[in-house]
Length: 278
Image (tube, rainbow, N blue to C red; front, side):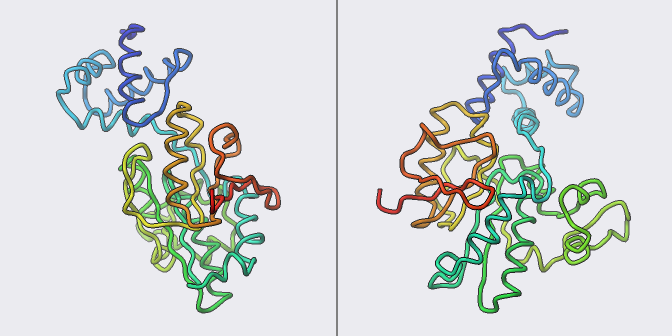
């Protein structure tokens, strides 16, 4: 059975209240598709039965499954390569940034999905650390979805996934082929050693995570309402260290959303730098 417009609007509002992700009328077909997928995966009879379960709040795990399915997990290693080139050449090689008084850099990979972004950052920072003894770093890896976060933490990627963005040298240096299944590659422990994984919803409180030199928050705002975009950016501002940076997706901007960041063109990438005394 095809869900009615009212049913889809009801479920779309539930998703928006939980994650901020908006399903417009034009995208209701995507919502219905995901509801059918969740219904099949959870053993519920179909999208209509799933709707009834959600409406009556019979099983919270069903709502969790739908929210997990609603997040966009499209990713790859070194996605938008110019962003990583800028981090390497414009920031890590800049003594004013990398030579801070503690010789320590913290980066937050927010909405990290299955971990390719976070491991790309770890590869860059590990190389930087080996070239400059005495320097250290930490990467916080977060996502709303428990499913993709567990996948990221496991650090297990298929042949196809490692071919999307990794060089042969990077694969050789930081991954081992799985003995159990040679179609998969496992991140080496030393690359994970300075990474922390945690479930965080960017619309909820996360005041206990410390401060960061850079926050990668890519392809999150594009799905949010203007109000939620401003809320997230305001919270990120308070999390970023003085003169630190936030990095957004290629189709996202802070123009019209925040006046306490300045646009910085670093190589082929755009970073937004915190105005320290705003």
